[in-house]
Image (cartoon, rainbow, N blue to C red; front, top):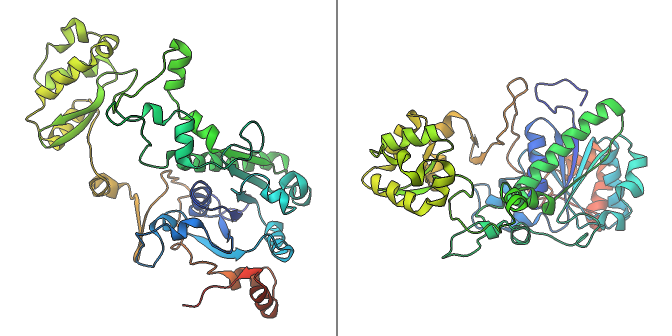
Length: 401
């Protein structure tokens, strides 16, 4: 952290022991902002290497490619003592290690933070990502995004009566857990600036999933009424929902009475705010179905895009319900430079933007153990030693092209 550079995290060295989504997303964001990240995969590779089709132009599964750019790749069998010594050489110069093994795995190998690493590497930030944490009734158990969505109540408030409780269409728990881990690591690095000491950082899918129950948990605490399925509607605000127009659907979000008056004027029904059923947000919530029917009748002949543009110009938030290709084709997506293109490699950039030390997304994601020779040589292992590692399965060489 002390090294000045053109990127926010230049000089930071990260050992990435993660697979699948939350951990690789966290370390990719560190890499985008200048950290040197070495990704250590098990002999079978990160599971997401095999989650295809689709595959990109370089043969990577699209899933893996989205989460692993800018990293050096090496495969080690960490159950073997010699591979653990390779890891120790990496940790000796590292600032951060991130792992998402099942809790207890690192301890089984003699590599636990409190067990071995904290004393040996006092400045090391150790970030552990897991489903439920190390202890408690669910401690040490495996966790996947969709399971946590179900278990922590997220599915119960997503969907409509016809569909029932529904998994959110993105791995939102995994995704946010990656950001939780990133935030914890950065806070620990700030603390190290003052204290000189590293620490353990923990991010769990369980805690993250429960934290997403906003405002539903607060509503439950206050009312003791179980939140239910509302489709695209909001439990506390109306109109705040998806509405059918002539050529598709729009989402209209109205937070206050002034916006509701402007909206009503624009759709040609200026009397709506004076109707006792719609005079305040509380009344609009109580009469939500009637209000939705009136709105959809008023916009039935309107095209989505012009309607939303006109509403936004009068201060009413509105957006067309786009599919994924339409969302990525928006002019504002291009203006915000949200899509990264490097030759045939295309991906989304991380959403944060630093203007003084801008991110610099690294090269396309690595092939399996692509940098084995490079990383091992940098650690001081000569050609004979590297060949011995490969022959004995301690490390995996880059596969022949």
